[in-house]
Image (cartoon, rainbow, N blue to C red; front, side, top):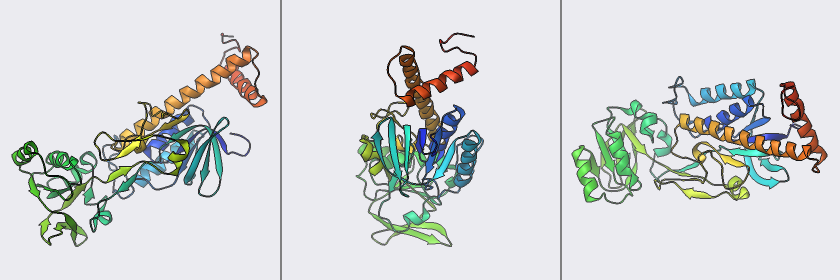
Length: 346
């Protein structure tokens, strides 16, 4: 960092599992890293995080608090704030926060997640993360053996119904706004004993603060104890627009995401993505893993850049004073670890 503490090797936008994992990896790699967290994790309504080895059932807020402590333990910084714009500048990127601060960094990792668009069904958002869930691997165990309803908004609803049949033998598919299943899909639904209800869903019935039924627009109520729905996850916003990042459709057709390579590298040099921004279907542990992968790629990219500059300086190529100071620091670090400036053992 520079003297005012606003310039970093890497700025990570987003302080969930992906962003904090990236921050931890980079801090342990002795990088000046800042994780900027808006404090609005996608899984905030959930009672617990599931499928995360050694942390199964932990509250999302507790997982985040532990992650923050681990990042700072290694010298990384975590700051609360919302990034509202980003642009390329000389030597890297400038990110502006909602508070008007400008932060600069040589590389960016975007782990700010996606926005979710819910179907227009009364009570759906209010029950989200409780008895209205979306992922069988995240919440299937918690709704096992209950009367489960699948709220379909597209062809993927049939797949969801077949998946949830693994956790309960009482599954009903509400076609809602989805197209009719194909002849083959009808047969496969019938073979698994999955009931199908036609007509749009108007709302949810709640009794004693627990989901008790699904109410159709016709007024009919079908008793259900849990509902599974997949909101459309949308990647976008001014932050991405300012960088010129490409947004593509997810292969399932239920979300959009940033176009990246397997490490999270985007088409914009110096920018990586991690977590649900690059894979909206990723679970918490998968998002954390993508943060580690992106961080390793970024660190490797910085090492390559620093080595290129060091070689150019050694050859006598012109450099700015700032670049020369940076290379000198690198050479001093090499000597401290038993290497000469020429790259041989001393």
